[in-house]
Length: 297
Image (cartoon, rainbow, N blue to C red):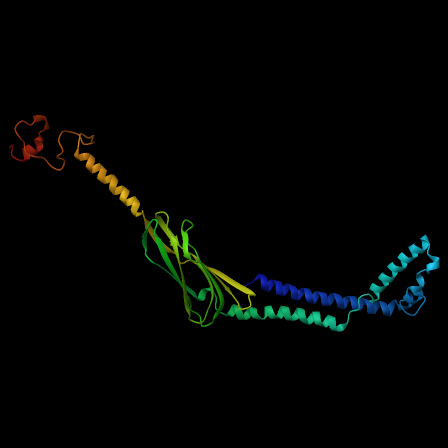
């Protein structure tokens, strides 16, 4: 599902803020107009003039005393309050209000108008992934070449696509990068590759692959995980195999010389059959069932 990116959300937020500022300034200006309409006579009586002039309330230099300072503070406060009420401190024109209103509307419109086009374009379902390995079976300590091919099956282009191919944590990335940011045209295929080192033996799965699609302006994004898994069987390293061979050869050499302990009971080493009786052999080792089968010879 397509969602707003951080950039798109910021643009929409600025648009609403601009419209809110325009509404606030329009309200402030409306309060000033209403104040002049309904409170104009009262203000004229307070200031003893036909306009908002508070100069008469300030004492002259010869009248400056401690009570006069309080009168100056009171006159300043009243002038500020009446200035706010009658819209004389901040003079806001219609052009400024209109400017903020148009700016906010254009910011919101620039983001919202692109959503249907992005949602109707190529989505994650139109992306096909294929992963190829340099070898399906490897030995511990080997380097593995991995190539990922991505195809856009749709007739619509993908302006921006991010591809992240996952590999086991025990692997070490030796060459290249396992991610790519590019664009895909209609029916276009693109590939990237990287090399990892396999430190231990075992059975591993490569993948899945995560894709993130953006519009050209970066206002929207849509992401998905492609469950394309590739199995890899890793055998012990050549050094481990050589050690096993050496241990086996040592055991064989040890059997050729000297006496050995064995789990096979009895005398001699003929374990695969029964030999003929030789004069002088103890009678207790004679296999009488076989003698009976051979006619008593």
